[in-house]
Length: 394
Ligand SMILES: [Zn+2]
Ligand SMILES: [Zn+2]
Image (cartoon, helix red, strand yellow):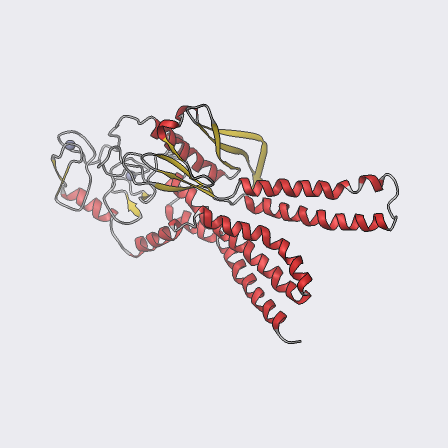
C-alpha cells in the first residue's frame, strides 16, 4: 500500500441479491397461499389419502425454500472493503481491522465452487469465494460471486492483499522512452515544468521540449476530456454498501406489507403495490451504480507508486503518470486513460484482460442503469396516482 491513503473498494456490489430476492418473496407467498388453500380443502374434507397426509408438506417445503433464499440475500448483500497502510477492514458487521501482519497472504485464495454455475449469454461462470487466511489458521470468506466482473475485482483485491503482506522489491519498470533520473534511474515525476527533482535521490531532472509536448497532450482539458472526467466522477460517486443495503432491506420487507395494507383498506392496494415496485427499482439502481466500481478497480486503476513519494504508474505501460488533481489521468507514454482515484496493483494475468476504452466502459455502465432509473420514475409516479385515488373522497 506504499504510503497511499486508505482506499474503499466494492467487495460485493449486491447485484446477485436481485434474483435471490424474487425467489425469497415468491416462495413465501406460495407457501402462505398454498397453505391456506390446502387448509380449506382439508377442512372441507376434499382431500383423501394419501393427498391429505402429503399435501401439507408442500407449503412447508416452500417456506423452507423462502428461508434459504432470504439467507442468500443476507449473505450476498453489498459490502465494501477499506485498504490502508495498516491493514484491511471489511465494512460490514464488526468492521474489525485486520492488520497486514495478521493475514497469511500466500494461503489466501480464490476458491471455485463448480456446483454453482450461472450462465449468462451462453457464458458459464462458476461461483467464486474470496477466502482470507489468517496467521492463526482461521479462514474467512470475504465475498461470494457468480458475476465475472466482480470475480475479476476479487482477483485484483487478492493480489493487493498478497502484495501488502509481502512487500516486493522496487523494480523501476516502465517503457524505454520513460523519462528517468540521470543519477539513479528512477522514473521521473513528470510535470509541466522545465525541471523536477528526483523523488529518490533529489537530483535535478530536466524535462525537454518533446516530453513537455507529450505531457501537455496527456493533461489537456478539451471538451472530450472534460466529458470523460465528468462521467468518471459520476461513476466514482458510489452509494456505500450500507446505503445500498438499506434499500435492499426495504425492498425485501415491503412486499409483505402490501397484504397488510390491503386489510386496512382495499383502495390502498394499488399505491402499496406501486411503492413496492418503486423500492425494488431503487435498490436495483443502487446495485447497478455500484457495479461500475469493480470494473474501474480491476481494469482502469492506475498502479500505485513503487515507494512513498514516487509518481503513480500507468496501468498499461507502468510509466510514471503526471501529477493532477483530477480523478482521470492520461498516460504521456502510451495514451491509456488511468483512474487516479483508485490506485491498485493488478496481477500480471489481468494486464491484457480488457482492451475496452474507459469512455465506452462508462457508457456501457450508464446504459445499464437506465432500466432501474426508468422503473423508479414509472413506479414512483404510479404510487402518487394510487395515493391520490385512495385519498380522494368517493
Ligand atoms: Zn534519482
Ligand atoms: Zn502508459
